[in-house]
Image (cartoon, rainbow, N blue to C red; front, side, top):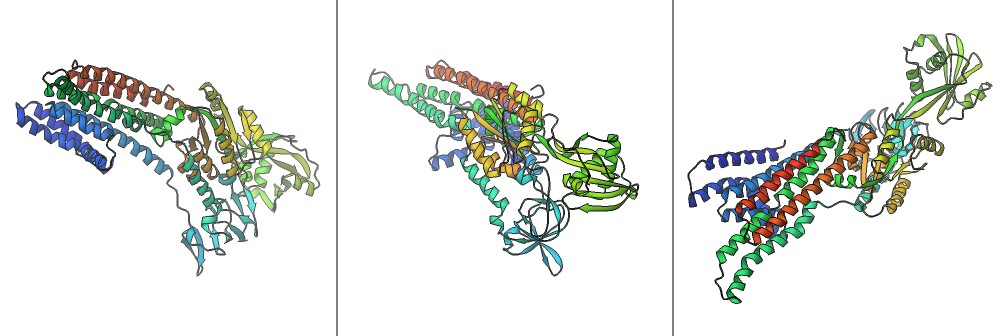
Length: 622
Protein backbone atom coordinates (compact mmCIF):
# COMPACT_ATOMS: atom_id res chain seq x y z
CA UNK A 1 0.00 0.00 0.00
CA UNK A 2 1.51 3.35 -1.05
CA UNK A 3 1.57 6.59 0.90
CA UNK A 4 -1.53 8.02 -0.78
CA UNK A 5 -3.55 4.87 -0.08
CA UNK A 6 -2.45 4.86 3.57
CA UNK A 7 -3.57 8.46 3.87
CA UNK A 8 -7.04 7.61 2.50
CA UNK A 9 -7.25 4.60 4.83
CA UNK A 10 -6.49 6.84 7.84
CA UNK A 11 -9.24 9.24 6.72
CA UNK A 12 -11.70 6.34 6.41
CA UNK A 13 -10.87 4.97 9.87
CA UNK A 14 -11.04 8.46 11.42
CA UNK A 15 -14.46 9.03 9.86
CA UNK A 16 -15.79 5.68 11.10
CA UNK A 17 -14.59 6.38 14.66
CA UNK A 18 -16.14 9.86 14.67
CA UNK A 19 -19.47 8.54 13.34
CA UNK A 20 -19.59 5.91 16.10
CA UNK A 21 -18.76 8.49 18.80
CA UNK A 22 -21.22 11.13 17.53
CA UNK A 23 -23.98 8.54 17.32
CA UNK A 24 -23.99 8.28 21.12
CA UNK A 25 -23.85 12.03 21.76
CA UNK A 26 -27.15 13.81 22.59
CA UNK A 27 -26.24 16.75 20.36
CA UNK A 28 -28.99 18.31 18.22
CA UNK A 29 -29.54 21.24 15.91
CA UNK A 30 -26.60 23.51 15.15
CA UNK A 31 -24.26 21.56 17.46
CA UNK A 32 -25.04 18.29 15.65
CA UNK A 33 -24.51 20.03 12.29
CA UNK A 34 -21.13 21.38 13.37
CA UNK A 35 -20.04 18.03 14.79
CA UNK A 36 -20.87 16.07 11.63
CA UNK A 37 -19.15 18.65 9.44
CA UNK A 38 -15.86 17.39 10.91
CA UNK A 39 -16.06 13.77 9.62
CA UNK A 40 -17.69 15.02 6.42
CA UNK A 41 -14.78 17.39 5.79
CA UNK A 42 -12.24 14.65 6.55
CA UNK A 43 -13.75 12.11 4.17
CA UNK A 44 -14.94 14.37 1.35
CA UNK A 45 -12.56 17.31 0.97
CA UNK A 46 -10.77 15.79 -2.07
CA UNK A 47 -14.05 15.01 -3.84
CA UNK A 48 -15.30 18.54 -3.16
CA UNK A 49 -12.05 19.97 -4.53
CA UNK A 50 -12.32 17.84 -7.69
CA UNK A 51 -15.92 18.93 -8.17
CA UNK A 52 -14.87 22.58 -7.72
CA UNK A 53 -12.03 22.20 -10.26
CA UNK A 54 -14.46 20.56 -12.68
CA UNK A 55 -16.84 23.51 -12.38
CA UNK A 56 -13.95 25.96 -12.85
CA UNK A 57 -12.72 24.10 -15.96
CA UNK A 58 -16.18 23.86 -17.50
CA UNK A 59 -16.47 20.10 -16.92
CA UNK A 60 -19.28 20.29 -14.42
CA UNK A 61 -21.16 17.05 -14.72
CA UNK A 62 -19.11 14.15 -13.48
CA UNK A 63 -19.36 11.67 -10.60
CA UNK A 64 -17.46 14.02 -8.26
CA UNK A 65 -19.99 16.79 -8.84
CA UNK A 66 -22.95 14.49 -8.29
CA UNK A 67 -21.40 12.99 -5.14
CA UNK A 68 -20.79 16.51 -3.82
CA UNK A 69 -24.29 17.79 -4.62
CA UNK A 70 -26.01 14.67 -3.30
CA UNK A 71 -24.13 14.55 0.01
CA UNK A 72 -24.35 18.31 0.59
CA UNK A 73 -28.05 18.01 -0.18
CA UNK A 74 -28.44 15.24 2.39
CA UNK A 75 -26.68 17.39 5.02
CA UNK A 76 -28.88 20.37 4.13
CA UNK A 77 -31.92 18.16 4.74
CA UNK A 78 -30.55 17.37 8.19
CA UNK A 79 -29.51 13.80 7.41
CA UNK A 80 -25.94 14.28 8.56
CA UNK A 81 -25.12 10.62 9.16
CA UNK A 82 -26.38 9.60 5.75
CA UNK A 83 -24.46 12.37 4.00
CA UNK A 84 -21.20 11.34 5.66
CA UNK A 85 -21.89 7.60 5.18
CA UNK A 86 -22.51 7.99 1.46
CA UNK A 87 -19.15 9.70 0.97
CA UNK A 88 -17.49 7.14 3.26
CA UNK A 89 -18.70 4.23 1.14
CA UNK A 90 -17.56 6.01 -1.99
CA UNK A 91 -14.03 6.49 -0.61
CA UNK A 92 -13.83 2.83 0.43
CA UNK A 93 -14.65 1.84 -3.14
CA UNK A 94 -12.07 4.28 -4.50
CA UNK A 95 -9.42 2.88 -2.13
CA UNK A 96 -10.15 -0.68 -3.23
CA UNK A 97 -9.89 0.35 -6.87
CA UNK A 98 -6.60 2.19 -6.31
CA UNK A 99 -5.12 -0.77 -4.45
CA UNK A 100 -6.18 -3.25 -7.14
CA UNK A 101 -4.71 -1.11 -9.91
CA UNK A 102 -1.49 -0.66 -7.93
CA UNK A 103 -1.12 -4.40 -7.39
CA UNK A 104 -1.67 -5.11 -11.06
CA UNK A 105 0.87 -2.47 -12.14
CA UNK A 106 3.40 -3.66 -9.57
CA UNK A 107 3.13 -7.27 -10.77
CA UNK A 108 3.66 -6.19 -14.37
CA UNK A 109 6.61 -3.93 -13.51
CA UNK A 110 8.27 -6.76 -11.57
CA UNK A 111 7.71 -9.07 -14.50
CA UNK A 112 9.53 -6.60 -16.77
CA UNK A 113 12.45 -6.00 -14.38
CA UNK A 114 15.24 -6.73 -16.86
CA UNK A 115 18.54 -4.98 -17.51
CA UNK A 116 18.36 -1.89 -19.75
CA UNK A 117 19.84 -1.83 -23.24
CA UNK A 118 23.43 -0.63 -23.50
CA UNK A 119 26.38 -0.83 -25.85
CA UNK A 120 29.93 -1.88 -24.96
CA UNK A 121 32.57 0.42 -26.47
CA UNK A 122 36.27 -0.38 -26.03
CA UNK A 123 38.34 2.54 -24.67
CA UNK A 124 41.98 2.21 -23.59
CA UNK A 125 41.72 -1.56 -23.54
CA UNK A 126 38.64 -1.56 -21.28
CA UNK A 127 34.95 -1.96 -22.06
CA UNK A 128 32.73 0.98 -21.26
CA UNK A 129 28.94 0.77 -21.21
CA UNK A 130 27.27 3.66 -23.00
CA UNK A 131 23.76 4.62 -24.05
CA UNK A 132 23.07 3.18 -27.54
CA UNK A 133 21.73 6.61 -28.57
CA UNK A 134 25.25 8.00 -28.11
CA UNK A 135 26.95 5.52 -30.47
CA UNK A 136 27.64 7.04 -33.94
CA UNK A 137 27.72 5.09 -37.20
CA UNK A 138 31.04 3.30 -37.77
CA UNK A 139 31.77 2.67 -34.08
CA UNK A 140 33.06 -0.78 -33.12
CA UNK A 141 30.99 -2.22 -30.26
CA UNK A 142 31.66 -5.42 -28.32
CA UNK A 143 28.87 -7.92 -27.66
CA UNK A 144 29.64 -10.63 -25.12
CA UNK A 145 27.88 -14.00 -24.72
CA UNK A 146 24.40 -13.58 -23.23
CA UNK A 147 24.08 -9.94 -24.31
CA UNK A 148 21.74 -8.42 -26.86
CA UNK A 149 23.09 -6.79 -29.99
CA UNK A 150 22.04 -3.16 -29.36
CA UNK A 151 22.59 -1.67 -32.84
CA UNK A 152 22.57 -3.03 -36.40
CA UNK A 153 26.02 -3.60 -37.89
CA UNK A 154 28.59 -5.88 -39.58
CA UNK A 155 30.79 -8.34 -37.66
CA UNK A 156 34.43 -7.27 -37.74
CA UNK A 157 35.79 -10.03 -35.55
CA UNK A 158 34.52 -13.22 -33.89
CA UNK A 159 32.03 -16.02 -34.51
CA UNK A 160 28.92 -16.88 -32.53
CA UNK A 161 25.46 -18.41 -32.52
CA UNK A 162 22.70 -15.81 -32.53
CA UNK A 163 19.26 -16.39 -31.05
CA UNK A 164 16.94 -14.56 -33.46
CA UNK A 165 13.66 -16.08 -32.26
CA UNK A 166 12.48 -12.86 -30.60
CA UNK A 167 12.77 -11.02 -33.92
CA UNK A 168 11.92 -13.56 -36.61
CA UNK A 169 10.02 -16.27 -34.75
CA UNK A 170 12.55 -18.82 -35.98
CA UNK A 171 13.48 -21.26 -33.21
CA UNK A 172 16.79 -22.36 -34.83
CA UNK A 173 19.75 -20.12 -33.89
CA UNK A 174 21.89 -19.00 -36.80
CA UNK A 175 25.65 -18.91 -37.11
CA UNK A 176 27.33 -15.53 -37.45
CA UNK A 177 30.77 -15.07 -39.02
CA UNK A 178 33.02 -12.09 -39.84
CA UNK A 179 31.51 -9.74 -42.47
CA UNK A 180 27.98 -11.04 -41.71
CA UNK A 181 25.34 -8.38 -41.21
CA UNK A 182 23.57 -8.60 -37.83
CA UNK A 183 20.52 -6.76 -36.51
CA UNK A 184 19.71 -5.36 -33.10
CA UNK A 185 17.62 -7.46 -30.77
CA UNK A 186 19.45 -10.75 -31.47
CA UNK A 187 21.02 -12.45 -28.46
CA UNK A 188 24.64 -13.58 -28.63
CA UNK A 189 24.65 -17.17 -27.38
CA UNK A 190 28.37 -17.93 -27.72
CA UNK A 191 31.62 -16.11 -28.51
CA UNK A 192 32.68 -12.48 -28.30
CA UNK A 193 31.70 -10.33 -31.29
CA UNK A 194 33.13 -7.02 -32.43
CA UNK A 195 30.57 -5.25 -34.58
CA UNK A 196 30.97 -2.07 -36.62
CA UNK A 197 27.67 -0.21 -36.50
CA UNK A 198 25.99 0.65 -39.78
CA UNK A 199 23.02 2.57 -38.37
CA UNK A 200 22.23 4.90 -35.53
CA UNK A 201 20.21 3.43 -32.68
CA UNK A 202 17.09 5.31 -33.77
CA UNK A 203 17.25 3.64 -37.20
CA UNK A 204 18.02 0.13 -35.93
CA UNK A 205 15.64 -2.81 -36.21
CA UNK A 206 14.46 -2.72 -32.58
CA UNK A 207 13.74 1.03 -32.77
CA UNK A 208 11.69 0.54 -35.92
CA UNK A 209 9.68 -2.21 -34.26
CA UNK A 210 8.99 0.09 -31.30
CA UNK A 211 7.86 2.77 -33.76
CA UNK A 212 5.46 0.23 -35.21
CA UNK A 213 4.12 -0.35 -31.69
CA UNK A 214 3.52 3.37 -31.19
CA UNK A 215 1.80 3.76 -34.56
CA UNK A 216 -0.37 0.73 -33.92
CA UNK A 217 -1.28 1.99 -30.45
CA UNK A 218 -2.64 5.22 -31.88
CA UNK A 219 -5.21 3.25 -33.90
CA UNK A 220 -6.05 0.70 -31.27
CA UNK A 221 -9.66 0.60 -30.11
CA UNK A 222 -10.32 1.20 -26.41
CA UNK A 223 -13.60 0.93 -24.53
CA UNK A 224 -14.53 4.04 -22.60
CA UNK A 225 -15.08 3.65 -18.90
CA UNK A 226 -18.76 2.98 -18.30
CA UNK A 227 -19.07 5.35 -15.39
CA UNK A 228 -17.79 8.29 -17.43
CA UNK A 229 -20.19 7.51 -20.27
CA UNK A 230 -23.10 7.08 -17.88
CA UNK A 231 -22.31 10.20 -15.86
CA UNK A 232 -22.08 12.25 -19.05
CA UNK A 233 -25.83 11.87 -19.50
CA UNK A 234 -27.10 10.81 -16.07
CA UNK A 235 -25.54 13.58 -13.98
CA UNK A 236 -26.87 16.60 -15.93
CA UNK A 237 -30.24 14.86 -16.33
CA UNK A 238 -30.81 14.36 -12.60
CA UNK A 239 -29.39 17.78 -11.70
CA UNK A 240 -31.68 19.57 -14.14
CA UNK A 241 -34.52 17.29 -13.06
CA UNK A 242 -33.98 18.21 -9.40
CA UNK A 243 -33.82 21.91 -10.29
CA UNK A 244 -37.03 21.63 -12.30
CA UNK A 245 -38.70 19.76 -9.44
CA UNK A 246 -37.74 22.51 -6.99
CA UNK A 247 -38.82 25.44 -9.20
CA UNK A 248 -41.51 24.48 -11.75
CA UNK A 249 -44.29 23.02 -9.54
CA UNK A 250 -44.27 26.00 -7.13
CA UNK A 251 -44.36 28.43 -10.07
CA UNK A 252 -47.25 26.54 -11.67
CA UNK A 253 -49.16 26.51 -8.35
CA UNK A 254 -48.56 30.23 -7.88
CA UNK A 255 -49.17 31.52 -11.42
CA UNK A 256 -51.60 29.10 -13.04
CA UNK A 257 -53.55 27.83 -10.04
CA UNK A 258 -53.29 30.81 -7.74
CA UNK A 259 -52.27 28.57 -4.83
CA UNK A 260 -49.47 28.92 -2.31
CA UNK A 261 -46.20 27.86 -3.98
CA UNK A 262 -45.05 25.64 -1.06
CA UNK A 263 -41.36 26.25 -1.86
CA UNK A 264 -40.14 24.36 1.21
CA UNK A 265 -42.04 21.18 0.34
CA UNK A 266 -40.85 21.09 -3.27
CA UNK A 267 -37.24 21.94 -2.37
CA UNK A 268 -37.38 19.05 0.11
CA UNK A 269 -38.58 16.75 -2.70
CA UNK A 270 -35.81 18.02 -4.99
CA UNK A 271 -33.13 17.38 -2.38
CA UNK A 272 -34.57 13.93 -1.70
CA UNK A 273 -34.49 13.39 -5.46
CA UNK A 274 -30.77 14.27 -5.46
CA UNK A 275 -30.01 11.95 -2.55
CA UNK A 276 -31.81 9.13 -4.35
CA UNK A 277 -30.00 9.94 -7.58
CA UNK A 278 -26.52 9.57 -6.06
CA UNK A 279 -24.89 6.87 -8.21
CA UNK A 280 -22.96 5.14 -5.41
CA UNK A 281 -24.08 1.67 -6.48
CA UNK A 282 -22.63 2.28 -9.94
CA UNK A 283 -19.66 4.42 -8.92
CA UNK A 284 -18.47 1.76 -6.48
CA UNK A 285 -19.82 -1.58 -7.71
CA UNK A 286 -18.83 -1.21 -11.37
CA UNK A 287 -15.11 -0.52 -10.74
CA UNK A 288 -15.27 -3.05 -7.91
CA UNK A 289 -16.63 -5.69 -10.31
CA UNK A 290 -13.86 -5.02 -12.82
CA UNK A 291 -11.10 -5.03 -10.25
CA UNK A 292 -12.48 -8.08 -8.52
CA UNK A 293 -12.28 -9.69 -11.96
CA UNK A 294 -8.69 -8.42 -12.29
CA UNK A 295 -7.89 -9.82 -8.84
CA UNK A 296 -9.46 -13.18 -9.64
CA UNK A 297 -7.58 -13.32 -12.93
CA UNK A 298 -4.35 -12.47 -11.10
CA UNK A 299 -4.89 -15.36 -8.71
CA UNK A 300 -5.36 -17.59 -11.75
CA UNK A 301 -2.02 -16.47 -13.23
CA UNK A 302 -3.44 -13.90 -15.67
CA UNK A 303 -2.42 -10.24 -15.32
CA UNK A 304 -4.90 -7.77 -16.81
CA UNK A 305 -3.59 -4.20 -17.13
CA UNK A 306 -6.95 -2.45 -16.80
CA UNK A 307 -10.69 -2.88 -16.45
CA UNK A 308 -11.36 -1.79 -20.04
CA UNK A 309 -9.34 -4.78 -21.29
CA UNK A 310 -11.62 -7.17 -19.41
CA UNK A 311 -14.58 -5.71 -21.26
CA UNK A 312 -12.82 -6.14 -24.62
CA UNK A 313 -11.64 -9.65 -23.75
CA UNK A 314 -15.21 -10.69 -22.96
CA UNK A 315 -16.23 -9.76 -26.53
CA UNK A 316 -13.41 -11.69 -28.22
CA UNK A 317 -14.43 -13.91 -31.15
CA UNK A 318 -11.13 -14.20 -33.08
CA UNK A 319 -7.95 -15.49 -31.39
CA UNK A 320 -4.71 -15.15 -33.39
CA UNK A 321 -1.55 -16.93 -32.19
CA UNK A 322 2.15 -16.58 -32.79
CA UNK A 323 3.79 -20.05 -33.06
CA UNK A 324 7.27 -20.17 -31.54
CA UNK A 325 7.15 -19.79 -27.75
CA UNK A 326 3.38 -19.40 -27.77
CA UNK A 327 1.92 -22.64 -29.09
CA UNK A 328 5.32 -24.38 -29.08
CA UNK A 329 7.99 -24.39 -26.38
CA UNK A 330 10.54 -22.54 -28.49
CA UNK A 331 13.30 -25.02 -27.54
CA UNK A 332 14.83 -28.00 -29.33
CA UNK A 333 14.14 -31.54 -28.16
CA UNK A 334 14.82 -34.98 -29.56
CA UNK A 335 11.47 -36.23 -30.81
CA UNK A 336 12.51 -39.43 -32.59
CA UNK A 337 15.27 -41.83 -33.65
CA UNK A 338 14.78 -43.43 -37.07
CA UNK A 339 16.44 -46.09 -39.26
CA UNK A 340 18.85 -46.90 -36.45
CA UNK A 341 21.17 -49.88 -36.83
CA UNK A 342 21.68 -50.12 -33.07
CA UNK A 343 19.66 -49.50 -29.92
CA UNK A 344 18.31 -45.95 -29.55
CA UNK A 345 20.13 -45.43 -26.25
CA UNK A 346 23.43 -46.52 -27.78
CA UNK A 347 22.95 -44.24 -30.80
CA UNK A 348 22.13 -41.25 -28.55
CA UNK A 349 25.19 -42.06 -26.44
CA UNK A 350 27.52 -41.87 -29.45
CA UNK A 351 25.89 -38.66 -30.68
CA UNK A 352 25.95 -36.97 -27.24
CA UNK A 353 29.58 -37.87 -26.61
CA UNK A 354 30.71 -36.71 -30.04
CA UNK A 355 28.91 -33.38 -29.49
CA UNK A 356 29.99 -33.05 -25.84
CA UNK A 357 32.44 -30.20 -26.46
CA UNK A 358 29.91 -28.08 -28.39
CA UNK A 359 27.56 -25.45 -26.89
CA UNK A 360 25.24 -25.49 -29.92
CA UNK A 361 21.51 -25.86 -29.01
CA UNK A 362 21.36 -29.08 -31.06
CA UNK A 363 24.29 -30.45 -29.04
CA UNK A 364 22.52 -29.55 -25.82
CA UNK A 365 19.40 -31.32 -27.05
CA UNK A 366 21.37 -34.50 -27.76
CA UNK A 367 23.03 -34.40 -24.33
CA UNK A 368 19.67 -33.82 -22.66
CA UNK A 369 18.11 -36.76 -24.53
CA UNK A 370 21.02 -38.99 -23.49
CA UNK A 371 20.29 -38.07 -19.89
CA UNK A 372 23.49 -39.38 -18.32
CA UNK A 373 26.76 -37.89 -17.13
CA UNK A 374 29.06 -37.13 -20.06
CA UNK A 375 32.56 -38.61 -19.66
CA UNK A 376 34.62 -36.44 -21.99
CA UNK A 377 37.72 -38.56 -21.39
CA UNK A 378 36.10 -41.11 -23.71
CA UNK A 379 36.16 -38.56 -26.50
CA UNK A 380 39.26 -37.60 -28.50
CA UNK A 381 40.12 -36.14 -31.88
CA UNK A 382 37.10 -33.84 -32.06
CA UNK A 383 36.86 -31.89 -35.33
CA UNK A 384 34.08 -29.39 -35.92
CA UNK A 385 33.19 -28.96 -39.58
CA UNK A 386 31.51 -25.56 -39.84
CA UNK A 387 27.93 -25.76 -41.02
CA UNK A 388 28.01 -29.56 -41.30
CA UNK A 389 28.64 -31.21 -37.93
CA UNK A 390 31.43 -32.89 -35.97
CA UNK A 391 33.64 -35.97 -36.17
CA UNK A 392 35.32 -37.55 -33.14
CA UNK A 393 36.70 -40.74 -31.69
CA UNK A 394 34.43 -42.20 -29.00
CA UNK A 395 36.17 -45.06 -27.20
CA UNK A 396 38.58 -44.95 -30.17
CA UNK A 397 35.67 -45.65 -32.57
CA UNK A 398 35.19 -43.03 -35.37
CA UNK A 399 31.85 -41.25 -35.01
CA UNK A 400 30.38 -38.61 -37.33
CA UNK A 401 27.36 -36.52 -36.29
CA UNK A 402 25.87 -33.89 -38.58
CA UNK A 403 23.66 -33.05 -41.51
CA UNK A 404 23.31 -34.60 -44.96
CA UNK A 405 26.27 -32.52 -46.25
CA UNK A 406 28.56 -34.17 -43.72
CA UNK A 407 27.40 -37.63 -44.73
CA UNK A 408 28.03 -36.85 -48.42
CA UNK A 409 31.43 -35.37 -47.59
CA UNK A 410 32.40 -38.57 -45.78
CA UNK A 411 30.97 -40.76 -48.55
CA UNK A 412 28.42 -42.40 -46.26
CA UNK A 413 25.10 -43.53 -47.72
CA UNK A 414 22.33 -42.15 -45.49
CA UNK A 415 18.54 -42.42 -45.28
CA UNK A 416 16.68 -39.10 -45.81
CA UNK A 417 13.95 -38.10 -43.35
CA UNK A 418 10.53 -36.99 -44.56
CA UNK A 419 9.45 -35.53 -41.22
CA UNK A 420 9.65 -31.85 -40.29
CA UNK A 421 12.49 -30.78 -38.03
CA UNK A 422 16.28 -30.71 -37.76
CA UNK A 423 17.79 -34.03 -38.91
CA UNK A 424 21.02 -35.21 -37.28
CA UNK A 425 22.61 -38.14 -39.09
CA UNK A 426 24.98 -40.45 -37.20
CA UNK A 427 27.69 -42.69 -38.64
CA UNK A 428 29.67 -45.09 -36.43
CA UNK A 429 32.91 -46.70 -37.59
CA UNK A 430 32.30 -45.59 -41.18
CA UNK A 431 28.77 -47.07 -41.40
CA UNK A 432 25.43 -45.30 -41.26
CA UNK A 433 23.84 -45.82 -37.80
CA UNK A 434 20.58 -43.86 -38.18
CA UNK A 435 19.29 -40.34 -37.74
CA UNK A 436 17.88 -38.34 -34.87
CA UNK A 437 14.95 -35.94 -35.33
CA UNK A 438 15.10 -32.72 -33.32
CA UNK A 439 12.18 -30.30 -33.39
CA UNK A 440 10.48 -27.47 -31.56
CA UNK A 441 7.88 -29.32 -29.47
CA UNK A 442 4.26 -28.24 -29.23
CA UNK A 443 3.28 -27.22 -25.69
CA UNK A 444 1.44 -29.83 -23.68
CA UNK A 445 -1.84 -27.93 -23.44
CA UNK A 446 -1.88 -26.12 -26.81
CA UNK A 447 -4.25 -28.54 -28.56
CA UNK A 448 -6.59 -28.58 -25.56
CA UNK A 449 -6.53 -24.78 -25.43
CA UNK A 450 -7.62 -24.54 -29.10
CA UNK A 451 -10.41 -27.05 -28.45
CA UNK A 452 -11.63 -25.21 -25.34
CA UNK A 453 -11.59 -21.90 -27.17
CA UNK A 454 -14.06 -23.30 -29.67
CA UNK A 455 -16.26 -24.53 -26.83
CA UNK A 456 -16.09 -21.07 -25.29
CA UNK A 457 -17.60 -19.58 -28.46
CA UNK A 458 -14.48 -18.40 -30.29
CA UNK A 459 -15.45 -18.43 -33.94
CA UNK A 460 -11.96 -18.64 -35.51
CA UNK A 461 -8.40 -19.49 -34.44
CA UNK A 462 -5.48 -18.30 -36.60
CA UNK A 463 -1.71 -18.87 -36.42
CA UNK A 464 0.84 -16.33 -37.73
CA UNK A 465 4.54 -17.20 -37.80
CA UNK A 466 7.86 -16.28 -39.35
CA UNK A 467 8.74 -19.98 -39.52
CA UNK A 468 8.95 -22.05 -42.71
CA UNK A 469 5.72 -23.03 -44.42
CA UNK A 470 6.04 -26.79 -43.92
CA UNK A 471 6.81 -26.39 -40.21
CA UNK A 472 3.85 -24.05 -39.72
CA UNK A 473 1.45 -26.35 -41.57
CA UNK A 474 2.52 -29.34 -39.47
CA UNK A 475 1.92 -27.48 -36.19
CA UNK A 476 -1.40 -26.07 -37.41
CA UNK A 477 -2.58 -29.53 -38.44
CA UNK A 478 -1.51 -31.04 -35.12
CA UNK A 479 -3.42 -28.37 -33.17
CA UNK A 480 -6.44 -28.09 -35.52
CA UNK A 481 -5.98 -24.35 -36.02
CA UNK A 482 -8.51 -22.92 -38.51
CA UNK A 483 -6.08 -20.77 -40.53
CA UNK A 484 -2.28 -20.51 -40.76
CA UNK A 485 0.00 -17.91 -42.37
CA UNK A 486 3.77 -18.51 -42.42
CA UNK A 487 7.10 -16.83 -43.32
CA UNK A 488 5.84 -13.44 -42.10
CA UNK A 489 7.95 -10.48 -41.02
CA UNK A 490 6.71 -8.23 -38.16
CA UNK A 491 5.14 -5.76 -40.61
CA UNK A 492 3.46 -8.66 -42.47
CA UNK A 493 1.89 -9.83 -39.22
CA UNK A 494 0.46 -6.36 -38.61
CA UNK A 495 -0.98 -6.30 -42.14
CA UNK A 496 -2.52 -9.76 -41.66
CA UNK A 497 -4.10 -8.72 -38.35
CA UNK A 498 -5.49 -5.61 -40.09
CA UNK A 499 -7.10 -7.92 -42.64
CA UNK A 500 -8.54 -10.18 -39.93
CA UNK A 501 -9.86 -7.16 -38.01
CA UNK A 502 -11.82 -6.15 -41.10
CA UNK A 503 -13.68 -9.49 -40.87
CA UNK A 504 -14.94 -8.77 -37.35
CA UNK A 505 -18.59 -7.79 -37.28
CA UNK A 506 -20.35 -5.50 -34.85
CA UNK A 507 -18.91 -5.82 -31.35
CA UNK A 508 -16.70 -8.82 -32.18
CA UNK A 509 -13.11 -8.37 -31.00
CA UNK A 510 -9.80 -9.90 -32.06
CA UNK A 511 -7.15 -11.09 -29.59
CA UNK A 512 -3.52 -11.74 -30.53
CA UNK A 513 -1.29 -13.99 -28.42
CA UNK A 514 2.50 -13.69 -28.74
CA UNK A 515 5.79 -13.57 -26.87
CA UNK A 516 8.59 -12.11 -29.03
CA UNK A 517 9.81 -8.60 -29.82
CA UNK A 518 8.48 -9.15 -33.32
CA UNK A 519 5.00 -9.65 -31.84
CA UNK A 520 4.91 -6.26 -30.08
CA UNK A 521 3.41 -4.29 -33.02
CA UNK A 522 0.71 -6.94 -33.53
CA UNK A 523 -0.08 -7.07 -29.81
CA UNK A 524 -0.69 -3.31 -29.94
CA UNK A 525 -2.74 -3.39 -33.13
CA UNK A 526 -5.12 -6.14 -32.04
CA UNK A 527 -8.21 -5.24 -30.03
CA UNK A 528 -6.67 -7.14 -27.13
CA UNK A 529 -3.01 -8.19 -26.89
CA UNK A 530 -2.06 -11.23 -24.79
CA UNK A 531 1.63 -11.83 -24.00
CA UNK A 532 3.38 -14.91 -22.65
CA UNK A 533 4.94 -13.40 -19.54
CA UNK A 534 7.26 -16.06 -18.12
CA UNK A 535 9.49 -16.26 -21.22
CA UNK A 536 8.12 -13.37 -23.27
CA UNK A 537 10.20 -10.36 -24.26
CA UNK A 538 9.94 -7.06 -22.41
CA UNK A 539 8.66 -5.30 -25.55
CA UNK A 540 5.84 -7.87 -25.94
CA UNK A 541 4.85 -7.53 -22.28
CA UNK A 542 4.92 -3.74 -22.56
CA UNK A 543 2.70 -3.77 -25.66
CA UNK A 544 0.24 -6.37 -24.37
CA UNK A 545 -2.99 -5.73 -22.45
CA UNK A 546 -3.02 -9.15 -20.78
CA UNK A 547 0.00 -11.15 -19.57
CA UNK A 548 -0.05 -14.93 -18.92
CA UNK A 549 2.33 -15.59 -16.04
CA UNK A 550 3.17 -19.22 -16.78
CA UNK A 551 2.99 -19.27 -20.60
CA UNK A 552 0.15 -21.83 -20.55
CA UNK A 553 -2.17 -21.32 -23.59
CA UNK A 554 -5.07 -22.74 -21.57
CA UNK A 555 -4.96 -19.57 -19.47
CA UNK A 556 -6.35 -17.73 -22.51
CA UNK A 557 -9.61 -19.65 -22.14
CA UNK A 558 -9.58 -18.96 -18.40
CA UNK A 559 -9.02 -15.25 -19.03
CA UNK A 560 -11.92 -15.04 -21.48
CA UNK A 561 -14.27 -16.85 -19.09
CA UNK A 562 -13.22 -14.62 -16.19
CA UNK A 563 -13.82 -11.53 -18.35
CA UNK A 564 -17.26 -12.76 -19.40
CA UNK A 565 -18.27 -13.55 -15.82
CA UNK A 566 -17.04 -10.13 -14.73
CA UNK A 567 -18.93 -8.34 -17.49
CA UNK A 568 -22.06 -10.34 -16.68
CA UNK A 569 -21.84 -9.16 -13.06
CA UNK A 570 -21.28 -5.59 -14.23
CA UNK A 571 -24.46 -5.65 -16.32
CA UNK A 572 -26.40 -7.26 -13.46
CA UNK A 573 -25.35 -4.38 -11.22
CA UNK A 574 -26.13 -1.79 -13.89
CA UNK A 575 -29.65 -3.09 -14.53
CA UNK A 576 -30.36 -3.55 -10.82
CA UNK A 577 -28.99 -0.17 -9.73
CA UNK A 578 -30.58 1.83 -12.54
CA UNK A 579 -33.89 0.00 -12.22
CA UNK A 580 -34.15 0.71 -8.48
CA UNK A 581 -32.96 4.29 -9.01
CA UNK A 582 -35.58 5.06 -11.65
CA UNK A 583 -38.35 3.60 -9.49
CA UNK A 584 -37.22 5.54 -6.40
CA UNK A 585 -36.73 8.74 -8.41
CA UNK A 586 -40.31 8.56 -9.61
CA UNK A 587 -41.54 7.95 -6.07
CA UNK A 588 -39.39 10.83 -4.79
CA UNK A 589 -40.70 13.22 -7.45
CA UNK A 590 -44.28 12.28 -6.49
CA UNK A 591 -43.53 12.90 -2.82
CA UNK A 592 -44.11 9.27 -1.87
CA UNK A 593 -40.47 8.42 -1.14
CA UNK A 594 -39.09 9.67 2.18
CA UNK A 595 -35.47 9.98 3.23
CA UNK A 596 -35.26 6.36 4.35
CA UNK A 597 -36.21 5.16 0.89
CA UNK A 598 -33.68 7.61 -0.50
CA UNK A 599 -30.96 6.11 1.71
CA UNK A 600 -31.97 2.57 0.65
CA UNK A 601 -31.83 3.57 -3.00
CA UNK A 602 -28.37 4.98 -2.38
CA UNK A 603 -26.56 2.96 0.30
CA UNK A 604 -28.67 -0.22 0.27
CA UNK A 605 -28.44 -0.75 -3.47
CA UNK A 606 -24.71 0.04 -3.29
CA UNK A 607 -24.12 -2.64 -0.63
CA UNK A 608 -26.09 -5.26 -2.57
CA UNK A 609 -24.31 -4.40 -5.82
CA UNK A 610 -20.90 -4.44 -4.10
CA UNK A 611 -21.55 -7.88 -2.62
CA UNK A 612 -22.54 -9.10 -6.07
CA UNK A 613 -19.38 -7.54 -7.54
CA UNK A 614 -17.15 -9.51 -5.16
CA UNK A 615 -18.32 -12.73 -6.88
CA UNK A 616 -15.93 -11.84 -9.70
CA UNK A 617 -13.05 -12.80 -7.38
CA UNK A 618 -14.05 -16.45 -7.39
CA UNK A 619 -12.78 -18.11 -10.56
CA UNK A 620 -11.75 -21.62 -9.48
CA UNK A 621 -14.55 -23.41 -11.26
CA UNK A 622 -14.36 -21.46 -14.51
